[in-house]
Amino acid sequence: MAERLQKLIAQAGLASRRQAEKWIEEGKVIVNGCPAKLGDRADLSLDKVQVEGQELGKAQEKITVLLNKPRGYVSTLKDPEGRRLVTDLLNDIPQRLFPVGRLDYNTEGLLLLTNDGDLAYRISHPRHNVEKTYLVKVRGTLTAKMVKQLEHGVILEDGMTAPAKVNNIRTTGSGCWFEIIIHEGKNRQVRRMCEVLGLTVVRLKRIQLDFLDLKGVPTGRYRLLSVAEMRRLEKIK
Ligand code: URA
Image (cartoon, rainbow, N blue to C red; front, side):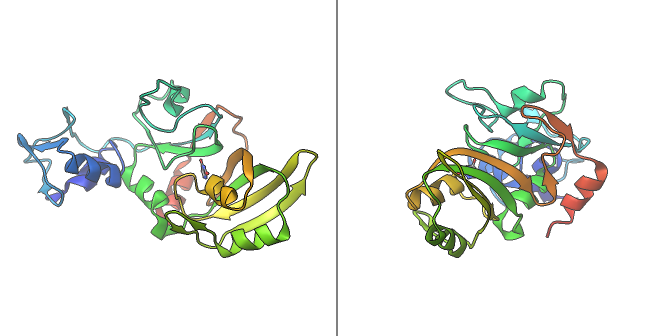
């Protein structure tokens, strides 16, 4: 049966659907020798589909890992500046995995990597409202007024943020720690929300994503998600 190319690419575990759409637009997807257009379909039993020279085969076993990302790693598959990649921490995994969303170079914590494009799409698409909890340390004081602003939503250059939840505020000598729960995934969202309030983030760690947390996974290490956890993620609507 013919399926949309971005779906076939995601099922083959090469990338998320969104990334696959970009590849199609960039002319990197070739069907029977001709560059494909967005919206094209193919049937893998009849058509030869190549992505950057690699032929799409049958769907491979799907795996997802939960990594506790350290600071100083980029969560992309390549880095023009030659910095360390999160995939360098998965040396003993033979499958080619890609990160589900991004954490900044200096953000730590929970990052999923998968070869399941559908799963990546479901988790990262704002429509699905997946909750992410970040532990934040800022210089200075988080005032009650600032908490209200974060909870109400702040205006960033790419629009207003949705209401967030702020918990567990603790003041220390040099600053203030708190937890913030958001369900959007705007670029550098937490840092930018803090900047708008005049706060500088000195530490940022994602500690929870939906029902997943970092328990038992030290910094720089990862674990495979269980089948039950994968099923639970598949149910995210
Ligand atoms: N918000 C940020 O500012 N950075 C991240 O890496 C994740 C969320």
